[in-house]
Image (cartoon, rainbow, N blue to C red; front, top):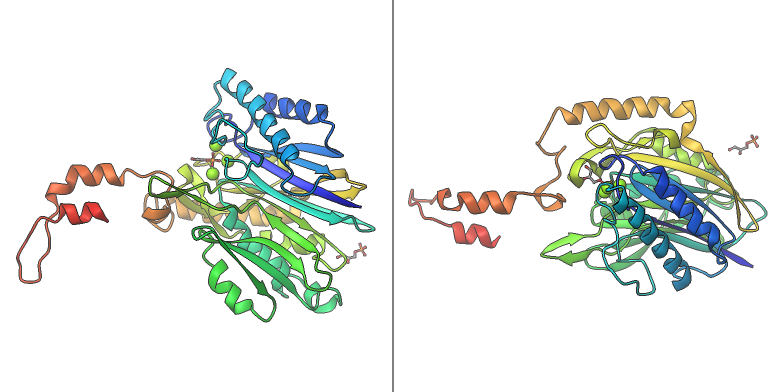
Length: 377
Ligand code: 13P
Ligand code: 13P
Ligand code: MG
Ligand code: MG
Ligand code: MG
C-alpha cells in the first residue's frame, strides 16, 4: 500500500521582520493538523519566517482535500498573524478563494507517493531567503557526482544512474535527462537555477521517485515573473538511493543562492540546526535545515536535526566568511542580483525622473534625446 509524504509551506508573517515564525503560529498550525482526520502523521516546523507542514497520508499527490487542509491551516495562522501584526501577515496567500490546489496560490509544495520500503529514511530539506533553484547544485551532487556519492560507483542499485526532471519556469515546460550519459546536457540548464529547476529525480534501477522539490511555474504579473519562493525538498535515502550522509554532504561547501535581503541579493546557503534557523544578519545569510525521519507505516519517526552536527561547523564558518566578503560589495553585482532578477527595484521611478537628462551618444557626435526608446526597453 502506498503512502504520500506532502510538505506544504508558506510565509504567513514574519517575527520580527522576516527572521522567524512566532510560536503562536506554530501552535495554531499544530492544533489544526491535530484536528484533521485525513493524516496518518504530521510535524509542524519552520525555517526562518516560513512554516513547513510535513504530512503523511494515503491520498496521493495533488489531493484537493490535503491541499485544502494546508490552505485552511495557513488561513487560521493568518488570523493570528494579523492580530499580532506580524510582518507581511498572510503574504504568501495570493488569492482569497481556494480552488482545489495550493500550487500557484503562494504556498510551496513538494509531495511524493511511494511504497514504503523495509526501512524508509527520508530527509525534508527546507530553506529560507532563497528560491527553488537552490536545490539544483545539491541534487546534482547527490545523484550525479561520484566525488560526492560513492554509491554511484560501488552500489549495484545506483550504478545505472538517475533520471532528472527539470522545469523551465518561464516557458512552463518540463524535460528529462538520463544520467550519467546526459550529464553535460543537464548542466547546460541547471547551472542557471533562476530559470531551470530540478523538479524530481528518479532511480533508473527501480523507476522509483528519489527526490522532489517545491519548484513551481512562475506567473507573469505586470511584466515580471513572480512566485519564486523559499523552497523545500524531499530526498529518500539508502538502499539504491544516496546514503543519508551522501544527501547531506553537498551542503558542507556552501554554494551561492539568490534571495537574500529583499529577495534581491546573492549569498551562501548556510546549513544550520533547527535552533539556528532564524536569519538576522542583513536578513540572512540564506539558511537550510535538514529534518531526518524514518517512516513506519506512514508515521514520522523523528525529526533528527541533521545539520546540528558539529561536523557542519566548518561549513557555517565558511558561509560566514563568504557572507562577509559579499556584504563588502554593498549594492554592486554580483552581491546584488542583476536588474531583471531583483524582487524590488526603483529603476522605473529613477529612470522616469532622469529621462530627459539622458542624451544619445551618436556616432558622429550628434546627440539626440532617446528617453522614449529607453523607456520602451
Ligand atoms: P554502519 O556500519 O554504521 O551501519 O554504516 C554503514 C554505512 O553504509 C554508512 O554509510
Ligand atoms: P522572505 O522571502 O523570507 O519573506 O524574505 C524576504 C526579504 O525581503 C528579506 O529581506
Ligand atoms: Mg517573509
Ligand atoms: Mg522566508
Ligand atoms: Mg524569499
